[in-house]
Image (cartoon, rainbow, N blue to C red):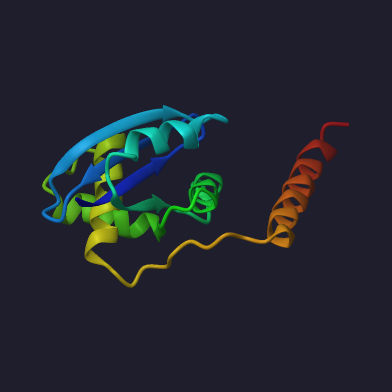
Length: 146
């Protein structure tokens, strides 16, 4: 069965929802953001042979998760937050803002907009750049504490 798995990522947990081609929710899961998140999601999704993952803000909050999915050999689509929000409010019939509804909206957006960017594995230079940026941000924050 061909399915789209939408993910609403957060710092503490990630909610994933599986939909079919008719946008019907088949299954959902919430996993704790941890070193085991990819193993848990992979085990849960393994029953769907033809699957594609859609991660909201794969270059932002969903960066680590999307990179881990790509490294595990999964196909991953980056869904901009504004697009997912519009789908939730205008198209899904489920305008209530909950993590499962958000994850479903991400999956629907990816399903209905085939031109979205596929996530590719970043090289080490990109990862080191992100670490350096984080270091500068923390240094700026702590500079005012003295």
